Image 1: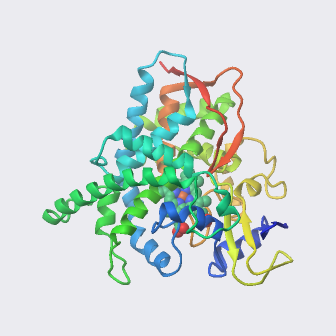
Image 2: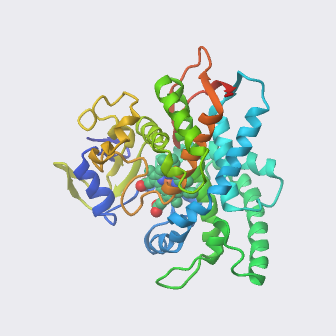
Image 3: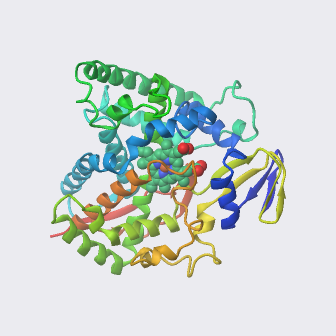
Length: 414
Ligand code: HEM
């Protein structure tokens, strides 16, 4: 579909073959859109989401060991620690207490990331850090009108003043943490690589032998928190909401998690296929990232339309995942679509919660491991019921999240 703002042309693409052309086959002709870079770059400068060109091609090579299967498995205890803290907190509250599940999942995802990145914590007052990060994200999710109309970067954005001050606080804490880790690493080079920061400090580009610069290191720490927290927490929030509306699936997940969590930690995620299918289905109905944008840097033919150079191309998982030509009963919550080999029949370009192609989500394995573990642990320990009269409406703010606090009554299982 072709259309446009008064200041530029936009094409929304939902045809699988055209999506393949944009996101996979021609990444150099379709770069991350100027709007996206303008919004992200001042905040995540030098991090993997925002970089382009040579800097981008080196970073995924250097960062690959961080998100390999073995490294992600080693982070399971950090994720389990954050989940155990949540369970202990919820157990301390009276049964039937109303909790804002959206805020709870947001805090949990931040805790899981913080424990995975810095196993000894981040320097500075943890509460001040949390406030800084949470405010940073709520502000960063808003698009400045100056970005939308394409004004150059040197013109100050009023919406950014607050973010800059917060970033300074975060920056200082990060500087202190990295300096301390470098000092300790110099004494014990091998003993340091136990968390993501340790792996990043040791990482080298296999082609050039170069490590990450200080700016890239900091940019990526912030990027992983930015890209990982809101996305994982909204996926979990929607999964818990959908389960509260489906007694059948809630019972199935509770039974599966009781059985799986009673066994050894090894192979745990593989013993939770139904829990994983619920997450897959939650991300189909409510994909945390609703749209990926690219700019065509030359004229092209796409799905029978001529695209002018400079057109912004939008691929929307939200549109794709509910497309009537691509899915049966697209609005129905049915995790069975992803079970017992049924998932293999889904068109690879019809389901894109993590994107596809060279700029696909590097943290997908991390997110799926964490979310599966958290969902199973919550369903084993608690029953959640939507508060009476609670309105649930999706709203797009960096991620697709519930517009209002998502109040649910939480009761401990016997
Ligand atoms: C449910 C959770 C998550 C979802 C749904 C998600 C979704 C996505 C999507 C759709 C993209 C591609 C954007 C595009 O093509 O323009 C992306 C990129 C990215 N994600 Fe995630 N993400 C999640 C979790 C995470 C986590 C936990 C991390 C890191 C710890 C992470 C780090 C990144 C990075 C660094 C990129 C940029 C990759 C590049 O440009 O080369 N994400 N994510």
